[in-house]
Amino acid sequence: MQRYFVEQLDEKGQVHIQGDDFFHLTKVMRCALGDQIYCVVNEKTAVTSIIGITNGAVVASPIEWLEDDVELPVNVSIACGLSKGDKLEWVVQKCTELGATQFIPWQATRSVVKWDSAKSAKKVERLGKIAKEAAEQSHRTRIPIVWDVVSIAQLIEQTKDHQIKIVAYEDMAKQGEKQQLATLLQQLKPCEKMVIVFGPEGGLERDEVDQLVAAGFHCCGLGARILRTETAPLFVMSAIGYELELR
Image 1 (cartoon, rainbow, N blue to C red):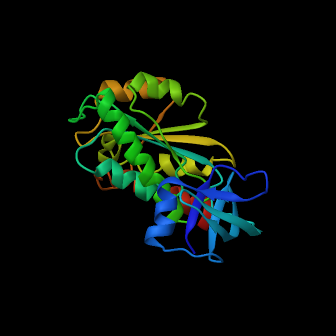
Image 2 (image 1 turned 90 degrees about the vertical axis):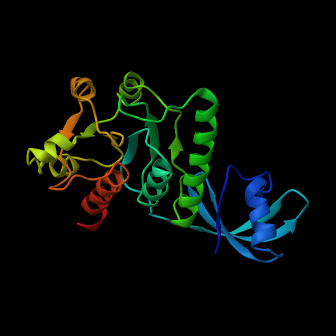
């Protein structure tokens, strides 16, 4: 069954699906009265039956509320230095599937691309749509937040309440550091927040690393190989999933 996120129930306890989701249901899925779909309301999933189709909304009534347990037990923020092409879109899609809670694009010194205010608004809107579609596809109960692009100072301020703070630094891998990430993941407790900072294609400047370390971030290597900027977040999210869900 298809899955849709709905902000709230109406006064009758029903859901109204509108906008792009309405178009998808009526034009792509060609829904009919009596069809069943999943609707997620306030991170709770219900099996619903379509009871009405108007010019602007599909109305569905909950049949059964499910006890989903699909979210990671911790909140994971992925902070990616702006990169070229569709790499950030790839990271948002795949890390949403792997359970990330929010994405923070940041303007690194070595970022080739620059986002002005107009470009940033369009990019964030698109990334938000990608996160929503990935959350639906992976049957999650929450849509990750995609923030506007920030500076390194704003990044540090925005994540100061996170209990575990990591910066993936390739120089640590070159030096043979392999234990820090595993050690930090083993310290995670349910409901805690963690943030992982990744650089752009050219990597991080030493000054950026120093600023992050001064703010309480731990430098980590990600194994013996040097990973691309779009691969590293997937590596870390997979490690988190293994540590918290499969061990």
